[in-house]
Length: 167
Image (cartoon, rainbow, N blue to C red; front, side, top):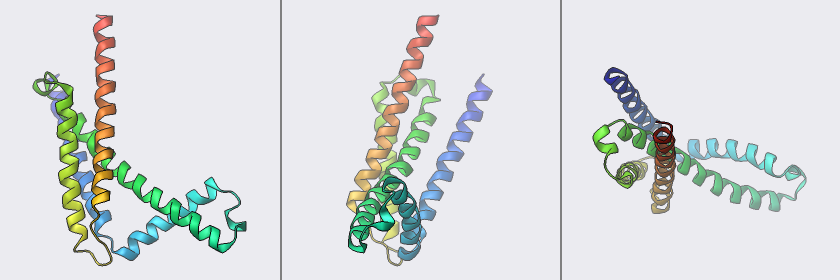
């Protein structure tokens, strides 16, 4: 059993590091590349949300597109760091000693990890052409990590309660 736990830890650690590299890679895209990718995603979503988008006047299209783009970019941040928070909390849950602590410490550490990485990520963007650091993005990143960690811990607790009842 201990062997399987160690394999899980190694896999989760590799996923955490890999995910951090992926976030770093997205942040390394210059402003034009980043905006182009965002625009491609936004235009697909806009057509799903508003089937008559192409028939709208250009001014309305632009206004709707800009609002949607902002929301989609923030959802991207939320999702990126949600995955990082989920992986981090999952990794922490593999340690029995940590599981015995109050679960809020797992959530707090996973969120802190996301916060620290978000700070380094936004700092990194200061050195990328056409990009900037945004404090608001750090808050969205923290929210993503926190939300995912809370959900994972809640699921963990619920599963453990069912397991205890079944015993």
